Amino acid sequence: MLKKSWKQMNLRGAGLQAVNASLTRQMRHRRTAYLLLLLAPLGLHRFYLKELWGGVAYLLLAVLLILGLVTANIPFALMAGVAIVVFLVFDAFWIDRRVNDYNKSLRMRIFLQPGKNTGEEKPTETKKRMPSFADQEAMLREMTRKKDADNP
Image (cartoon, rainbow, N blue to C red; front, side):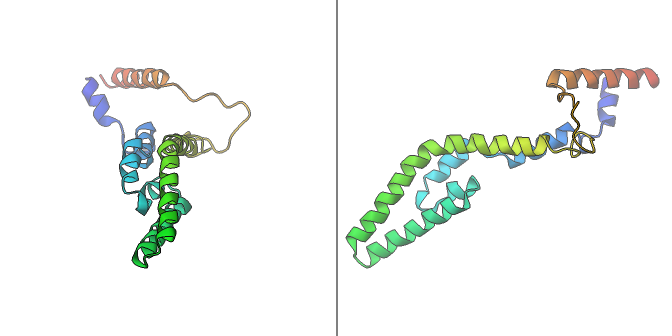
């Protein structure tokens, strides 16, 4: 009887499951960012973490390094190489904080938009807190129980 109720639920709508699925697709992951850091001169980790100017800076430094090596201007190439290494050391510590900040702002943008996910038209002063996961589970159980009682 419970399986019938679950089949009738719309999991593709604008419910919590759909919002969580969308959030999961958009979130950034530390492992991916650190793997992209291995390709540091390309700045892919910065682009992945939505830091456009940081990625462009890495690309410019890589171009300067290559130009210095091609033209045999060793001091020029050395300066660009040292700059890349300094940025790499900084980014090794920066990535963790950036992933946390990016994911937190993403969650806030998705879950705290008035009217988008909660059915509200505009925020009010007496707005109740968002139900916890346990509260949501209890509401789902109650809905299932009522639906099963209505459909014997």
